[in-house]
View (cartoon, rainbow, N blue to C red):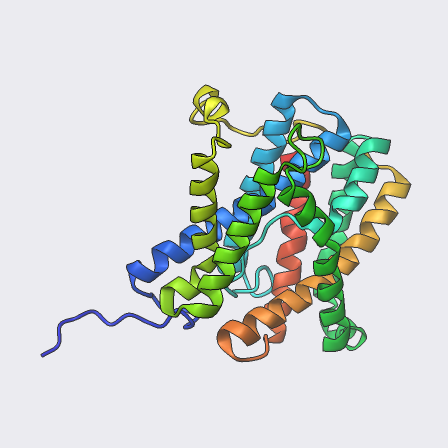
Length: 299
């Protein structure tokens, strides 16, 4: 009699994989997600000219809301609030150019007010998805996702050379760490199998971080000075409503909803080998909208 516990495949939607597979992949998701959530908050806080303490609060709010949005997608509330697909939700880089403009021209409360209205628009898109789906065939959604990906290259290159405004911008050490990290990710992704292939991003970050540590590019001074826990108070920055900002944000949220259609389609197709169901698509877009509304109040 075989008493060994049977584990599901990593590509089984409701399965429970081995811990030896789940833990490194979970860590990969966490480290990749943190970078994506923290970076937009840092860029926008710089454009808005807020102080260091408020910058930390904005970063915390971004991480907390991203976690809540991810849980909402994984464990839907009812039939139409969350996709039920294995997706990680975070801050979208597609909004950065607009948010930089709004932050420098107005302030953070104006951004949060526009975000609240934009979240309501995303909920409306999800509710009427069946009617709108004819306007967004795969060619349109694929093109939008591809275009957004291309638009992120300048941001990626800026951070590879050390981040805009940094004292060591363009330093060869920055490029060395970036290129080595990229090379390791490509190596594990294309020339290995199993868990190493799936965790290629985590491998690249581990080796890249180790290289930066050896080269003296890592400082723990701010980490040692920070507290272990800190709570983010809702409505810390407040909220304002300005027509120009609202219209601009409405357009971006519609574009982002199209991007979400492409994301959910690629997740279901690439991970589950099927097309997403209508319920999953509607719930996913609505979940994004609700997360944005929560994020507006968390700020």
